Length: 470
Ligand code: AMP
Image (cartoon, rainbow, N blue to C red):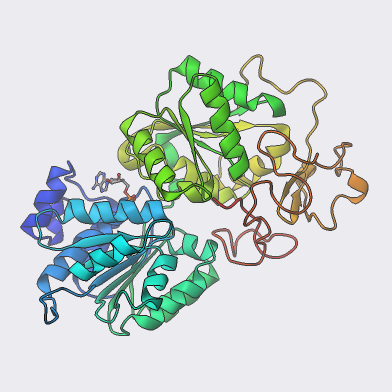
């Protein structure tokens, strides 16, 4: 199958060809003809599958086929609206719109918070065909009447599961209330919880369903490895791996913002250029970190899960889980940053005894065990025992137990471990005890929103495990 078999017009085929792509990915092969038909679409696909071109290419073609209703001053209204959960993803999607639409006379704009409103207002005034936005800033503009969504013909909800996971459901509903009822709607999601199904029911009209294999079923291109390590030796081991392996582009994940900053500082102190990227960073700092990392000026980008969502870097050779995620699906998202679109990659996890419970959950999800390789000199010291990890209101304990931290491990004793409950301000980027993660916002989110895991792994205490907000 070639792109030219999908019914795309010449200017789009030329742009795709200039990107070096001949063969559509499975999601593109299914989604492009379906969207060109004009109907609604429900697509099960995650980042790394080529989903962006899957909706951008046919959207551009449809916009070209439908003449814009210009206003008295000849300006185009917003005709396509793409909502994304994060600023980084919004920027990348808009970049794709520009890349694939380079031979077309359509205008696009990216809009997110953390930067001034006025330049966005100025740009809107000049007329924009395609708007890629995060929900908060979009609603700010709508509230101030600086944008009109009354002419939207195509509406895309990208990474809908992550949007709900980040608590955007109310914002999404507000946006749906102000776009026309009659429009073409496309919903992309990596997972399908009941909440996503409810949203799809509300938004979509007789949608075509397309789904591509989840990455955990197709992770063959990614070499996964676990290095068991002493709790206090992780930073040293990471520096050792980067230096001895002469790694130049490494994406490192931590659970919490605090740990993210501390790790970047440690690496810089040890001669490895690193920057942290998380939700407390200004947009300017996030954009610069990502640009430096992409260009190769920065060796290591340390990120939390939410900040890293949507980072699209071709053929990223190394992903390191400095800390395993407590939500197993996040592991799949994380390692999906490597081995993308046909390239091979390596995903390494530094796992201390406390995290064995997370590793078990992950291996259950991906239906395979990840090979262990101990690096001599970095193993856990004799006598080191697993300690529970506190995340928000939940204590995730040794021996496979998960409990609410409020009820806790009675008397400050870790179940089975024979060790005290987590030390306040515990090292290695671990959250402090006391009911909130050291990283601040968003720890106690159990039950607040449905994450990717909803409907699959029941969690004690109700709701989903809290995740460090990026
Ligand atoms: P996405 O899932 O949209 O984030 O895309 C993942 C990566 O695959 C991006 O870097 C795209 O540029 C790349 N890509 C998209 N379509 C193709 C294709 N047909 N062949 C090879 N790579 C592609």
